[in-house]
Structure formats: C-alpha cells, structure tokens
Image (cartoon, rainbow, N blue to C red):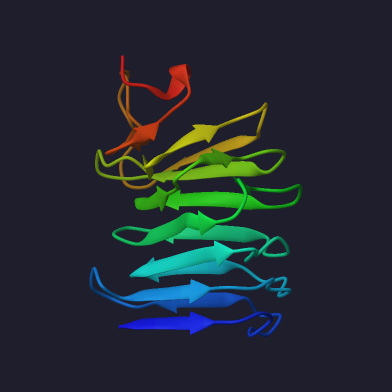
Length: 161
C-alpha cells in the first residue's frame, strides 16, 4: 500500500500512521500545519520535496516503523518546541538529520536501541535528551540507545564502546 497526501490534511489533533508491513508507505508532499503529535506506529511515513511537519510538537517513531526523509529537498531538522521520540523505530535519511534546537526523547526497553539511523548522519547540537526506561531498572553498564544501520552515522558519543 502506498498513499500520497498533499499539504494540510490533518486536524489540529495531529496525525497517526498505523500502516503495517514493509511496503506500507504514506508520503507527505507539502507543508502540514497541524499542531498535534505525529505518531508513526507502523509502516513508513515519508516526507518528500518541500514537505514539512514543523508545527507537530512530537514526532514519535514506534517499533518497526520508519520515518523516511530521503526525499526532502533540504536537510531534515527538528525545530524549537519539537521532540523526536525514539520508541524502537528507524529514522531514514539520505543527508544530514539535524536535531537543530529540538529535543530527543528515547524510550528504552528490552535491550533494543530506541532509535536506529540509516542512510544519513544524525547531528545533535546541545539538545535536551530525555531517556525513559520501561520495565525493570537497569544495572550498571553501557547500553546502546541509538544505533546506526546501513549507511547511518552517529555522533562519536553515541557510538558503542
């Protein structure tokens, strides 16, 4: 399944993408002006051309879901007042993925990285980072919260020790 959505098609309640399966993709092609959360809980949400979701307070990528910014004509950036929420999903980008002045929230569970970056470079710049652990408390040790997959690159401090 593949669907394409032009500009401003959501209500101010945000948008939830629940497509399932590797081939399920929803593509946004214009500027979305909704102010609610963007929740990607299945399939792929792709932004192309000049598409944007700059007014969405939280962009949440769930386990097995993908947020694909490879088709954008410029670098994808999380802005002021926005938070990228990693819930075990994949951020896909062909260029830089810049958190700019936004925040990063990582929900860590069961030894699985909260966010996977592929085909792009994740750039952090003094961002607020919030880490939530679900399940039992973690014992002393090192835990990989963000992972790089094929073509993905992370800042030095995010790489496994």
